[in-house]
Image: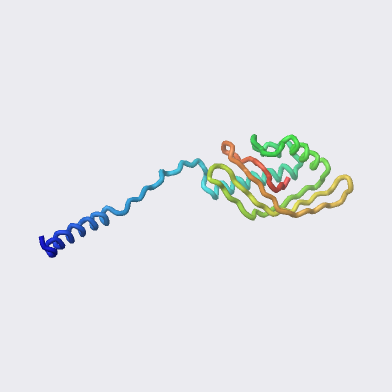
Length: 159
């Protein structure tokens, strides 16, 4: 076989192989869709903010029992110490007010929501009748338990 004849046969065969690959397209293996039971992010953020507002309202109303209802069953701190600390703080304060701004709210998509806030807390110390104002930043982690969100931990506490 001559070189020209071989080229005449090989070139169309090679072209056919290349075109067949282009028509078929590249082979892409896709991951199966991830099952998630998470609510849309905006709804999740709204519900966590609502929980935080309700916690603050309970704290300002000095209602320790209602406040404790917002703690997760798996609260990572010592909940007895936390409960004692909250009750002691509520007994020694009057006219409590907390204002906050959410700096960041992030969800892991599986029921945990991380919230960073800047806050101003004011209260009157019952023993001294002095008005106390403190500002700071807090980090809170909420977890979905059923349809509700509960406080799981406070790496930088607000309460």
